[in-house]
Amino acid sequence: MKPTHIEDYLVQLHNGQWFGWSNSKNKIYANLIIHDNSKTKPTEQECIDGLAQMQNDFDNAKANRIAKKESAKAKLAALGLDEEEIKTIIGI
Figure 1 (tube, rainbow, N blue to C red):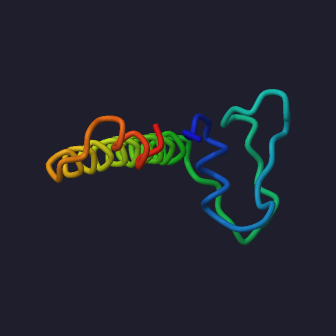
Figure 2 (cartoon, one colour; figure 1 turned 45 degrees about the vertical axis):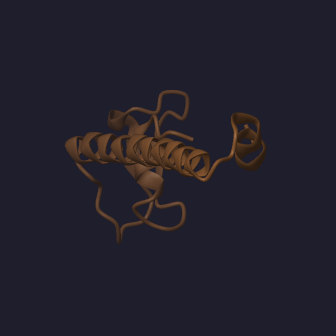
């Protein structure tokens, strides 16, 4: 699933329940609290940039999967398989 919230970024920074929200119904940076004193609070910009990078990585991985699938279809067609055979193999 595509990351959509800074919480998606935060959970991958450290193990365990190291952060929380002062208002769990309004999960915005201003409400971010750190439970583990050994961890530092990332800046808001770090959260924004980290989430953007995760979204970019997700989109790139998805595009790569699509490109590989298309490449596989083309290679199977070049081997002489027809459209129905290719669909059967690829599962679409």
